[in-house]
Image 1 (cartoon, rainbow, N blue to C red):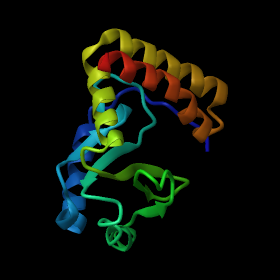
Image 2: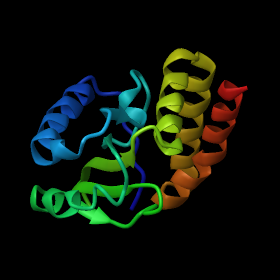
Image 3: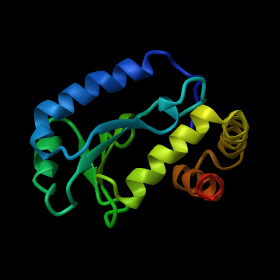
Image 4: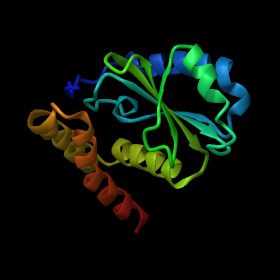
Length: 166
């Protein structure tokens, strides 16, 4: 699937809030902590694939397994992507995605890293600009391979996380 980046859309936060309400009505009983808007659509001004990334806190992957059939019934597609750290879903279909949902144990390493990286992009213009440039470059060079695009952003994300932790 080709990576297509869009300029920031001021409707993205509202789309997140609407989907958050829907998720709370479907699996709110499993919530531990919070529901977070993550990914590039959560950073004002950032270019992004126009897909709302949602991180939903759960106590554990095992304890949240009952969410899978409920979410599938409500319109999400479930895939065992990075199943050791999250339950991953997309909506409405793998070919046309408007939302990604990540059920992640609250306060896990993945949880904390995603929030820390988002905050770094929001507060440090150098990180923001470097990430924007990297995303544009990768979309042009490997944009035909969504998984490779994601993997190649990894070293930059890790560099930022290492710098803000030191």
